[in-house]
Image (cartoon, rainbow, N blue to C red; front, side):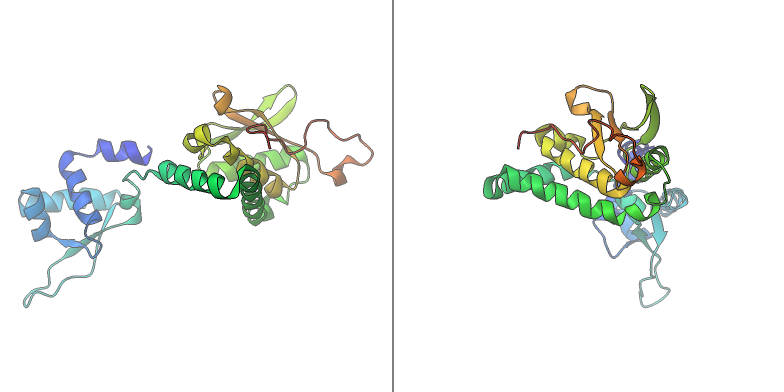
Length: 236
């Protein structure tokens, strides 16, 4: 269940309770929640118990009150992640600024450099692959952990990585250069050339990537044509 739909599936009272905690980084007491929600102590405690069971809320440090300390409840990171964040809007603004002040070629180079650096950081596990097929499976697992909903598919006798949930999709529709980041990341992570064979931006249901062969693996076999790192999203 995705975070956005998880928030909508909670009742109105629990959503309001979570928003109160979101606005109260130091936490809130049952009494404060009763006042905000307009419900009884028992009802607040029942909602808190349900949200704690789901890992959204936890008991924080008690607040001294001159008598018996009052229990305080805080929003956990899982609860904070329920609230949508318009990253695409912010990232799009950053991209427009960079295009205006650095130029298209500089932005393309920057995205490729960033992808390469992060790909190298992720390469340690994939580097254990003994051949292209294994590298393809390991890359799919790596992308899946990053939220790409990736899997390995057979296409025309080749294994390819298929990603159904591009994390940059909303941004890429306005700024297709961000695809350069993906390609550079995958190439650096696998140590192999990567070709995008299908793209959601061009109407495909998912993006697909074919992993090429390392030069050291060729051992006399001619290089596989067309498997150089490639991106046709925007002319340089």
